Amino acid sequence: MKKISLFFLLLSALVAPLAAKTVLRVGYFPNVTHAQGVIGKTLTSQQKGWFEERLGPDIEIQWYAYNAGPSAMEAIFAGSIDLTYVGPNPSLNAYIRSKGEEIRVIAGAARGGAALLVRPGSGIEKPADFKGKKLATPQLGNTQDVAARVWLQKQGFKITQMGGEVSVLPTANPDQLSLFQQGKIDAVWTVEPWVSRIEREAGGKVYLEQKDAVTTILVSSVKLLKNQPELVKKFAKAHRELTDWVNAHPAEAQALVQRGLSDDVKREIKLELVVAAWQRLTFTSEITLDSIASLVADARQLGFIRGEVELTRFINIPQ
Image (tube, rainbow, N blue to C red; front, top):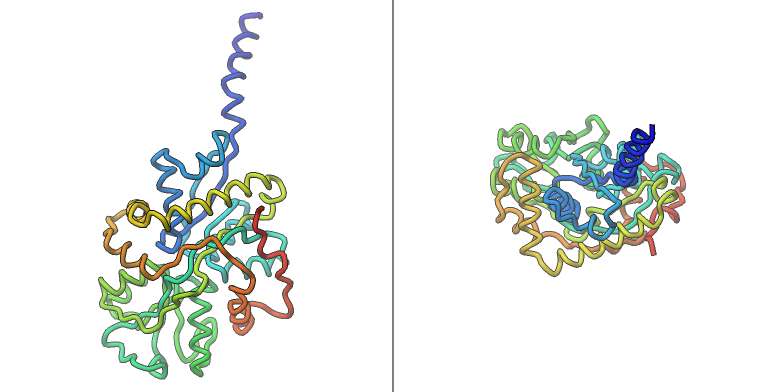
């Protein structure tokens, strides 16, 4: 009996440290606009984790890739992930849907890197030429989808979720490229590296560029903030440090993003493509309510937001 008891005692001692590990599940998109997430995932896979080094040995980070924001927000709602890099519009929609009970913005990540491109031969030269055309966006309700619909409305077009005078077609980024090449869509509103890929691989012409728009932010579930505020604080700090490193070491950062994107899409992404995309982006961890005020107005114009919305809790920067 004593030998058996000693065996289980030793076994418990070995298992306990493993059981004590906290798993942090983080979402990102395989886009250059999510460089911090792509780099974090790449270094985790190489066992040189940027975030792991700063969060400590008791934290295990698991990375999950999404095509666009609405999918990542659904994952937050379902409790499938704890934090995610995401566009501002889906996070706003999620905050409003949950009456402020599910998510908080804990940092900025990137500005710019989004653009509207038109296909050669589409006949689009001026805004009026978009009538009757097909324009693809990454996903219904994502940041580029909202931007496209608002811009079209400002040009005088009647736009509905399922139709209108211009067909806005939510289409996954990889599919946008092939449909553009085949001439099945006339224009695309998307983000890097897809902007540069459509330029280079399909002859797309940039018609309009969002140079200073908030493209990517970092959000946390309220549950994680309440249960482990120190962990969120450490992650946000590590994110800010990574953003500073990205700006100080662009060549190294670009190489890591190129490697990470290639792994995600299962094909070699050329480094020169990442370098070209980089020129359209500004990486910053700063974020304020003022910087997204226009996005709130746009979402309200499209009917995504109804009535008055209290946004004072939307941004919660860990101190």
